[in-house]
Image 1 (tube, rainbow, N blue to C red):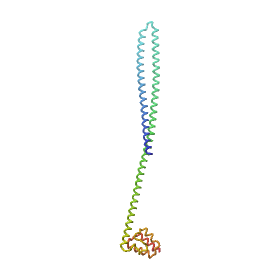
Image 2: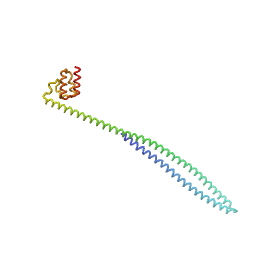
Image 3: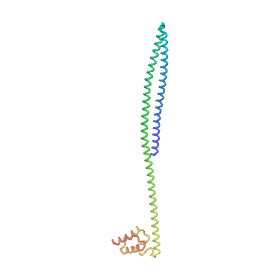
Length: 245
């Protein structure tokens, strides 16, 4: 469950980084288009200025040609109209220039802000991706360790069960061998010993049955043990009993 959530966060963070980059490209594109549009407008104003200058030159030639005539009123009117036209053009041109600079500054600021915001988003996204990838790696590693530990436990348990089965089988075979040996030597279950069915007893069982025996009985059991199975543990137990008797 946690791994799935981290994968979802990684996908969402990656999508956010792509979206931030897209907004940056859009801001750059808008700024470039606006810049080109203002260049076209500025170029058009230059053409208008050239046309106005041609009109000024033509009017000046006409006025020079009409010097000495009596048509002063008409010439004065043309001069005033041309002056007003020049003044209006330059006023518009200056206003357009100011607007051009202001708009360009605004677009530059928006583009810079978009770049800064994108850079912050990219930095934050990389930080989140690093954390999530590291957490995902830790979870995968932990799962691998858990599987390995579980497999080791199962193997150890199977080994213990196998050893226990082998030990039980060996004890059963040993008991069967002792019973067969007892039946073969005519002891009839070792009735001459103070411990009944002695040959069928394991080491721990024989040690417990030594309790309460006299020294003579212990010597008889020791002699029989030495002549048959000669189990060192049983012999040591008998010797300690004899010394303490």
